[in-house]
Length: 276
Length: 252
Image (tube, rainbow over all chains, first blue to last red; front, side, top):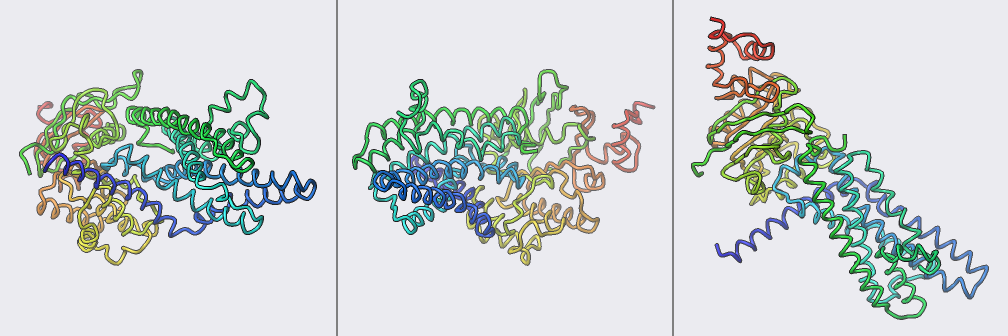
């Protein structure tokens, strides 16, 4: 077998393992409608609440609030992209712990990076299942189409998903280090970043001393870009580039932390009783 | 199948923390292809730690493991693709059907013609009627057969079994043991078995490692051990070792 053919065969095997990890979750969702419903529940609920808030504000100050409505709903929907991506990754990992199946996975030929790839795949599926219905409902109920932002929306989605995965890698690393005690972070950690991620207001609203920290969050650049697209009709390429650059730094840092904690768990024996 | 042993373990030790007692100390052995070995010892003797290190789930403090010719420190994924493991203490996802569970592992182990392999295993292990049932709804005996099917899905050359018949009734336990004997004869698969069932070890194993406080305190074939301790069954030998009673030859 030539080196090229060998690499191709290894790539096919690797893809099969990633698919196997994803298939395990897809089969689970196929059998559990409450899990499917849960995927859509929060994004749709958030969108409905914020939709009514903006409709109320529009009634008070028609000229200003009608513009703000799009910005707020856009913020809600795009922030859900990051939140659902992070939760999709971390909860898929927790599902393996809860079903006491992780031992079988870790003694199979699955590489840690393939495990991460499988979790990223599930994160994308879960995010689209949650956010797409909310997007269409925003259009049906409030006449707000997120797609009016234009093709750059794809880059906004990609950047927010990457940030979600970076945070989820950090959460998963903490679960490997601290076990069940770190599980609540899977639900809560990204909510804690909301005030600093400029989701509903520009970074300039924050105190001067806080603004440099906000600009270290990739999402802050995405939301500045979203406001530029919705309010001025321009693509803020500088913010987009900053968002992707920061995402690469975050992913590299959290990926290193994950691999380090994974190896640490193998040394401590934590993989034998993780989650207990 | 090449001439390398199924397992070569050299001076294997594990200490979980610097201040903790040694869980496994200076364990060395060579297990040939097609052999069936038993790992015996009381609770805390180091059986689970040893199996976890053999599977790459746990990094040894020192020593070396070569499984099927692959060094577990540098090439463990190549070895893991040719090994498998079954334990009643590691579950399969309960909500997935038996077929879905086996399909997942067929993908993870890169099994060719996975559906045919699943049907073949289902037939051999009498699981055909259960393929569409959720794994969580099965009896203990049925779960054991599914776990065995999972462990055999990649036609392993080395099988590690942790108490394969724990919590099974005598009839089902006997069925599993007979099946393992037949499978070993047909495939030449090497089996390392940790068990508290001495009858099972006596019946299946051609060599036994007796562990105590992480060290091998005795080893040999079941017949050798029975003769050496002057006992009629391995349970008595186990108790002699656990309670530090003298061996016949030492006493005499």
